[in-house]
Length: 292
Image 1 (cartoon, rainbow, N blue to C red):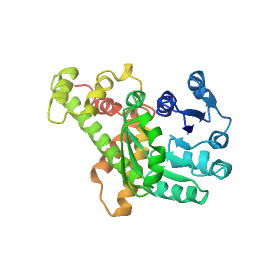
Image 2: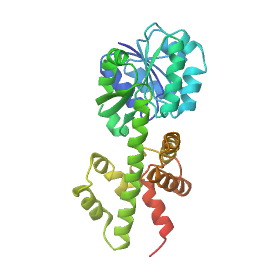
Image 3: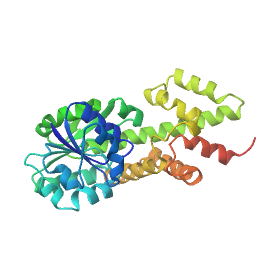
Image 4: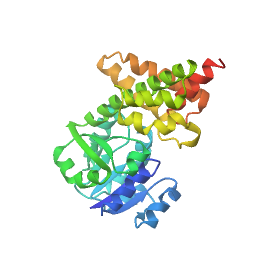
């Protein structure tokens, strides 16, 4: 298939690479064009604009930071969707929340484009292994057309309902990730304060009732945060939790755990830096507790 990919960041780069390795004809665009160089070297075409990338595509994939970035790069420039081919399917794979997803889908439909909200669960390492899980909302027929592209990037994808359903589920998953990060961090710091080695404490967590893929693949980061590249930045999680709390407010749901996690992420970002990984929550707790 002819695929346009807009947004070649930490997650977008391996995802786009998997699309290319899946045998698809790939055109990529990123505001910082140098981010596209590894894909160019592997045979992708690098476009000078999002509109140019989309012009002959059958499927458009966007992987951007937030709703504002999607607005700026795809919707603000009328030519991006207005000049797109008929029956283009847009896989919007960023974490933007259900309200923005439904709004963007309606605007895309006005240009003859079918948008599916299809955010993913998984880290950079998971993306590199094409083992992401996608949560999809929108038209089932459009999903069938785009399925070969999704299959190149994911180990599973679930059609959850109408437009916005995938975006809503992604926020629920990220609430769980935030809460588990806080819980692991607190358990480790408690164990360390009791004189237990960090690595030994983590082995217990990984072997116990709450063992999970997340616990396994975050092990290196929790044990050696300085030596492990950030995979999920604190500021991105803060954004996702804000979206989740907005969704909860709209539905009349008191998301108390999400609110507590958002407070912890804000404290950690202030102490450790918003570009740092979620595991820095543990370092923030160590900093707050001080010596002894």
